[in-house]
Amino acid sequence: MASTQALRGRHIVLGLTGGIACYKAAELARELVRAGATVQVVMTEAAAQFITPVTMQALSGRPVFTSPWDARPPGNMAHIDLTRQAGGADAVLVAPASADFIAQLAQGRAGDLLSLLCLARPAARCPLLVAPAMNREMWAHPATQRNVAQIVADGAAVLGPDAGEQACGEVGDGRMLEAAALCEALVAHLQPKPLAGRTVLITAGPTFEAIDPVRGITNHSSGKMGFALARAAAEAGARVTLVAGPVHLPTPAGVRRIDVHSAEQMLAAVLPEAPRHQVFIATAAVADWRPAQVAAHKLKKGGSGHPPPLALVENPDILATVARLPAGQRPWCVGFAAESENLLHHAREKLRRKGVPLIVANLGPATFGRDDNAVVLVDADGEHALPQADKLTLARQLVHEIAARLPAAAP
Ligand code: C5P
Image (tube, rainbow, N blue to C red; front, side, top):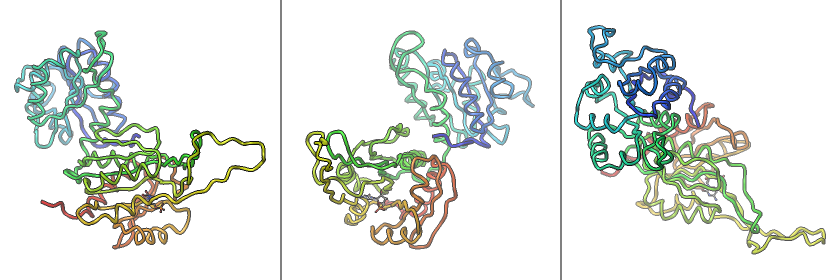
């Protein structure tokens, strides 16, 4: 789910080193510009063998730099200026990063403009992100792995690589991540980290309550809000576990996912996890009832004109069950209230009945399946509205509101 203009006002230095994945860097430059960033491209000589600076200049809308001897920057110091201009670069992203370039970084070498610039960047405010791209044997080689471990120890973030078919015809680890995934990883990296060191458990999606082997009771919940929250919490620095009902959504990067179908399975997945997490956010639209009995075989019409009797029993309330765990095992609980009318009244009543410190209220039928939403936070102190926005933007705001309300972590 794209949050529009997620990099608005950001200045990114995009470094290209030699590798066939340079063709993906063209798409990456476009993605970054589309996300609102200004992009300064710096290329090594080897990169210019794979894609021309002219292409990268056209896509980034800025002159490309390739040489430390380039006389264009004032003072003739491209390696200093390029991370300080335009208010200072927010990040240096090297994509693709070749095995040779990672080796240079690991050793602190500065033989060309890009390695020089990585070394000379103001490291405290300008993170270095590296997207490796190379043949699988090169990636797996102990020398490369040693170098990667070294640059991580020195503070770089390594994005990927992916596994799959390689340009050389071999199959394995070493493919550069796709442009969209790299852009998303950069956005995530630049988010504030109010949940650093915290653990967050989230339920999402609908549940499916089987009637027989082919039929069941479910609802229109898409899972989008819960998945957006999982992504936002992970971006904010939390370790996130997502217990998901049946939805076809990709797992957000870095999130641990447990798939379930029914409310009882969701409860069984949540209960052992809850005491291991500091925050529990229940976004799942859990079916209120389930068939008292699941037929072993498909129910037949039978020709009598009478539908089969369908006795229902109430499902366990997962949120209320977690909220009643003894102190010490109980995470800080957040519930959702999807109502069709009288929103605040129902939300406040739910706050009391479920015994949770925060309820996020929204107009249910208006939000199911949509990409945007508007909510009101209801807690003991009052109400706080978060206006209409896409669900990822809203999720990021919610994560901040939750972080601000959390009791201080035990030392
Ligand atoms: O009672 P109601 O379904 O309106 O409450 C909604 C909130 O409670 C949501 O946070 C939802 O995830 C949670 N819930 C639950 N288990 C249920 C029903 C609701 O965790 N069986």
